[in-house]
Length: 164
Image (cartoon, rainbow, N blue to C red):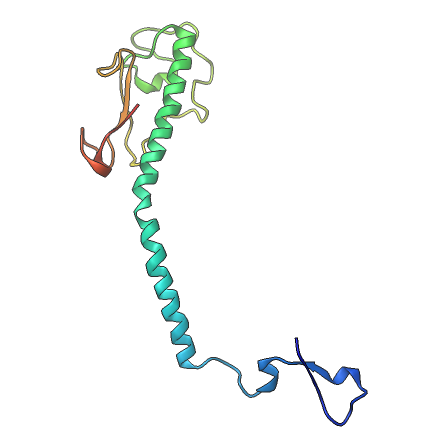
């Protein structure tokens, strides 16, 4: 940092001032229109480069969340089978993980409080229930899937079903 010495009082230390642009030109108190426009243009360019990278990630995040929820439901179903000897039937559905079934096979060792932490079955990231079949078509134990963004069987890309 440079210092300016104010003339006429060389021995007074309090008169030494830091050399800064704002102290030399004390009449300048603001930004010009051109300076503001340059800053706005720079911010616009940065936003144009950064935002598109995040915009396409929402669907990818939903698909990842669905995979994680399916894994959690699968773990809860395996605990159910360990306690009761069989997976819940299709008619009992995933509800058997949060309340003791009243139809079909009645589990003898059903865990009080259920098998899911929050005590409710999560919906998929698109707000629809997961599809559960037991015994499964693709797996002998059970099939568990989300129908994806379109909510219909099959699909490609973002609309593709998410299965275990």
